[in-house]
Length: 477
Image (tube, rainbow, N blue to C red):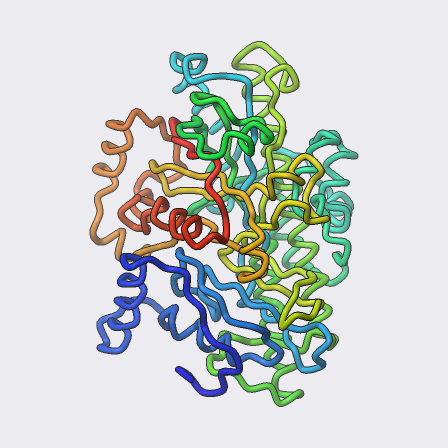
């Protein structure tokens, strides 16, 4: 194999342009000109293919790029019935259940044209942003434990979500395996003040316009079938709590590897057998962090609904501000898939990859049984986003998975060196996009030049048949 110990192949979904970006990263690493602390994504995909218990293939999505242990854009599934199969925090990431939620409205672009700046400012005022930002949702330690255990059931109980919201969220917004007792005091301390906060980096709350409709039937079913319609996209995760859960588990797993004689090609692939104490502890804590992320996005949904209601002197219900869907793209879940003509129970790691289940799958809402699961693909700052739908081919070939976004083309440090924040802001202004940021001098990190072309990424998935284009969204604020 490409690296020692590969038991399955590595599979890449790329077009010729994206392939060159991927191989360029590998080439720079080989000749010593690469920058950053991670090994190339190609090597990382191969290293994952050598992990114990992996089945079928280590899969790279078109937006793949190097990350901690697993590359971002990697899908890998491990057989739950294999006593040696592992779970790895690197296959989930530090921002556990980082994901995207889409809210629809019955407003159109003309309705917000004259109040776009005020609307952007109001959202910025309502939803705390930036590193270390603190939320406005009052939360006691007891509330936090309940939120970690109950997920969106807590949001519903406390009045921050609508009953129908849960129907349009993966796992109905609650991982049943969650156990708050497995979340450290330090993780809880970090998460306690952060409920209802966006965070920093590539997280955003964006007002978007339905720009193109590629599948009218599916778009109508989602309630976003009219060109010019206003929607709101929220991209965020589990904040400091999830990061601490991942950090804590890596220490435990290194001890478990030494005890159980598990060897890996990269120490960042720290892991434990799924059914070991360490493996089960991580899954329980990861599930609690995932619940926190859903509660967090629900709190921001509540704040976004209040913002629009005040701006348009209406109610969120009258504005039809329903959740279209909420997807996770940093998570590990127990699922059933057919491998080698046999139905198997697998632990599917998706890191920088999105679940994309097909029509008629029992785990997607009844509303979408005939169209497939909605898949939300966030673009970069100032570029388009997409709504896709899951396909049977994706279910058969990628464990029902597809891309999650554009994927970085260059490191944050390189972006800061090569781009000027004033140029980035001027470019957004020329496009008519209103922006509010916690730290303007860091916008270079999220500029379109720092990322791959999201349309190329989406088209690659569409052409490969692992997901289908439904709607293209254009940002306005």
